Image 1 (cartoon, rainbow, N blue to C red):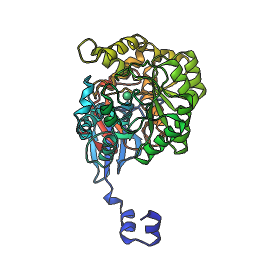
Image 2: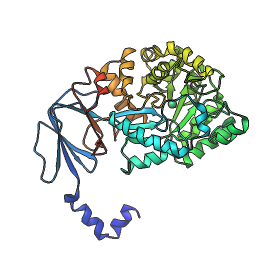
Image 3: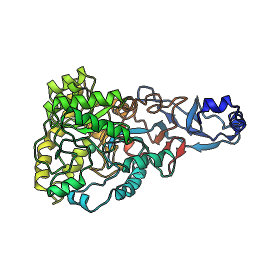
Image 4: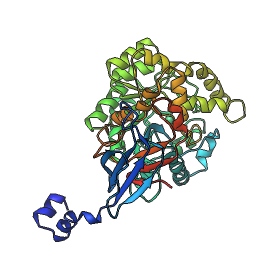
Length: 426
Ligand SMILES: [Zn+2]
């Protein structure tokens, strides 16, 4: 029953609950220093009061806690907003054995994902966007962390990505009848079928639509890294998603594929490896965000030559390694908006904050890098009134570190304390 209806009927139990704040669960946090958001100053000490999962006040100095409230004393530590990773795959650990897909059921992905959700939140990431998984694995974990059944970050999930038949994101490398069985059912051909698959994804619980706009590095397909979907297909996907209130995140490496995706109205480019000036211009003109996933390139490069990847994949990794060291810096100079995302799963979950060092290595300041993982990422999720800063009314998602992250964002690799939705992560 809706709340308004309950009130209209004068539900006694409910009005009692509303009038009895004594039941509220209040925690008071004493912080040595505070960074309210990436655009603010390094202040402190401060007292943050959290009630029922939300920040209700932030006061200067160390203030006494009200009777009945829990107190958390963080000593000299700096409290700042919880971090956001816009590109993770909690379902998987790094590996190269693509055939495992034939022997491991989706349920195993849930088990692995529960482990990785904890590793991710302990590393300070209180919100993640799941950039592609089997149909139910990410959605089950999304509910698990939301209801407090399992520890982990808030999860925004795409579910299975849309791909061209046999392209990156679909299945390839097996006998035809095996490819058929393993297909997620989300490959599509032509604007009409692609629109249908967007609607199907929405029907089945997607928070966002993921597509693989170009070829990819870690799949067995060896058809290059340029655009795989046609312009008409990408436009159909973007328009259909937007009509349903959903954004589209597109895996894209090749420059012309990036340019085409931006012009089609895709909201974010994931990876963006071969981005050139024309592609950057199209992104700026269409307000397309770049999610560079530099840790993914780092992760796969570390694993080269060890017999982990097949020859077709090794060739593709070698081809992108050089560009991966510079493309984000170029995009930044061309004025492309950059938001934080790592592709965790391609490297070990929990190392997500290593991305800050790599972003700064390509010219970002500490303040910009922190913004990319807080305020900017929150905007990409259209959750800028809920997460990404510390202010009254916001979800109590926060972390603590030693030192000032505005001076050196790499200290975020060592997060000492994490709270998600008002609950301390153990
Ligand atoms: Zn990915």
